[in-house]
Length: 203
Image 1 (cartoon, rainbow, N blue to C red):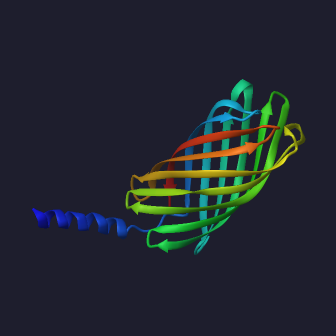
Image 2 (cartoon, rainbow, N blue to C red; image 1 turned 180 degrees about the vertical axis):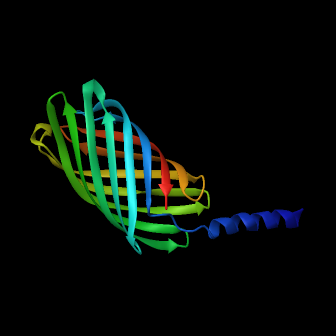
Image 3 (tube, rainbow, N blue to C red; image 1 turned 45 degrees about the vertical axis):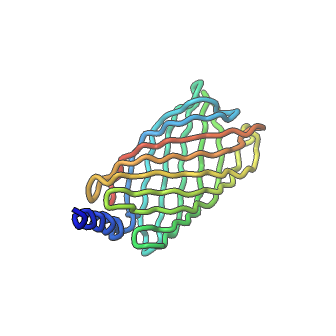
């Protein structure tokens, strides 16, 4: 019995150790839900997301994120971010990720449209904890410039994010990501939390 337990333990640990690194070429579609206590956007929101990434060469990738959500009182938001990044293996199954990001988001309220532009840096880790489970997490430092109607402010947005993906088969995965940040787009600070549940196709 003791030998059996030792054998099973070695097998489990080996499957974790030999898991390959995460895929950097994929597309995903998701459902977004969140909550905001910001002075301009206050309340719950929901919508859809699209995300795609391509490995341009060894250790270099490009990524685009798009979201379209409905906010409170007839306000909607639509926008995208583009990232160019480098990923380097720190272990056989874990990559250190550094990305330069540029984003544009608009808020529409009736016939009025306002928004913001931003740019910054993402630093994080992506790891194939096992052949069936990918984990990720990190922090973003974003400089945000809002339109005049939103205060015309230049502010720093710091975001923490983490998530996990269950690998269904070689190409398909189902995952969930969570992010939370503070941002000033009027005279008051507020916090925004976002949950994204998605299905991903990897190559």
